[in-house]
Length: 277
Length: 344
Image (cartoon, rainbow over all chains, first blue to last red; front, side, top):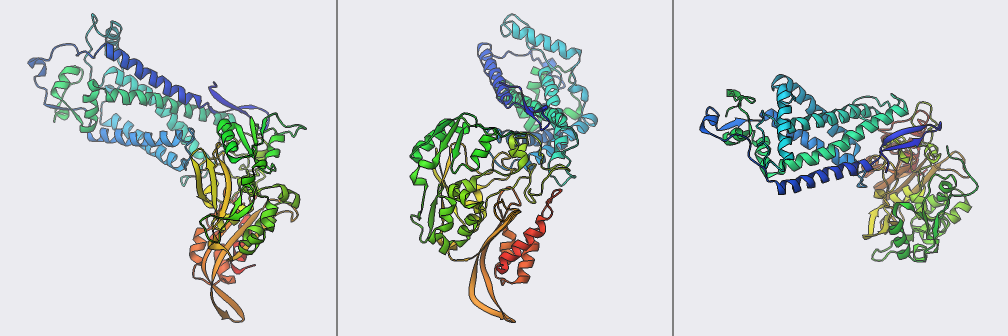
């Protein structure tokens, strides 16, 4: 198995072409192994309830519906989902041998993806709280508690699952990782647009040397196959019954008072009028 | 850069005597197999050591792939086995009388020796002649990520005006555009049985698959070409412009089939016919034979005159994107289309 594809150019130099497509299968396999592993673990250790009982006192002042995702956030998420789906299909199906006129669809979907990400950055910077997604000391404590619980035979004898701020630490970690992959495909994808015919600008495949282009292709490929594994895990968690309340909130926008009290720390996610419905 | 050596790399040679066996071998070896028809394209690749198949399947011993016969269930149609030589196609009386366009195109392929050896199936399925690609350079078509023919200093006078998509190579076949003009159907056998595709749909552009020129999968074989009687006896025109009249690939070629109405009228002293229907295809200007659908639409109901031909030529070249050295193909194509309409 190779990690990269190399070729010899007309001057006899070994040049990097792109990643080996074996990595696509490895990413799929890693995603599948993770999912199977988690399913086995989950079967042996059913999900536990978060720390602290839900009492009237803890539920006081919490509205019946707590807004978790605004309309703009949900719109962003789903438009991006469609763009990513189209990008993966147009990017990988030809590699798998399913041939169609993919390139135009791919770059147009790529631009749509970039547009959603730019929107998200602006939206998150000015309308949402950036800190909600950043990982700070408390999140690490939450992570450690979660890990201690997992390591202690699924919570038997270990601490209860921690209560999180608006986003649990695992979601924040996922967000961080997928952001790296997203920037990888976006930045290299933008540069690769220069190599093909689009109505946007005059094509210039000679902006970089062959070896640099090879590097661009490698980063694009690595980010893309990384996306595959991460998205498998993302979809898997979204489908789990104990996470369904979060998945539904990405559709309807809010979570129930009960879910809020059960899973969130009101001191770390302060419910305001804006987040009440 | 490829270096021609005295011997070709080793491979397993199979000489099946039935289509079934050939298909079984294609299935067994898949991408590592090579369907060998006349060998005129294949041997170049092998000697240059650029294509190195594990198994070469010589189709020469399969009788059912040879010959010209009537098409079952299609009146007035003709079926040509994929292994029929170009000489047989060019000299067959039935083809000459009804589908003169094809015999004309086949007779213009290379030299008599090559036509004696080369097959119709091989001629339509041959790979592009882009020398950067055939030289073994790691271009897009060879699986790399660059087109060496599309740089400011490339020698690209033979390359594409249309439908280039990263790769600028052109389809070199003479018979392929004629077959599209005749509305031929290509019969492909594979693991899923027989499939019949329009000649036009047999060819791919790099936008769909940059490494292949046809839809033929590694486990499939082109077994025959069917010519429906629809265009039999129409007015045909084939012209191929090349650097050397004796033996060369087309710089541009045009193939047309026109159905003209019986009503003729006089414009001065010149007889003029009305174009009832037309199919016109230009090759060597793009990665696949380029059917000029807009031209066809515009020409229906027009008279086949010099002026109409001229207008058709102008329409045909719309959307061209010349490279550094191939802009001469634009007037060439315009004039060939004009000549096809007026009938030379």
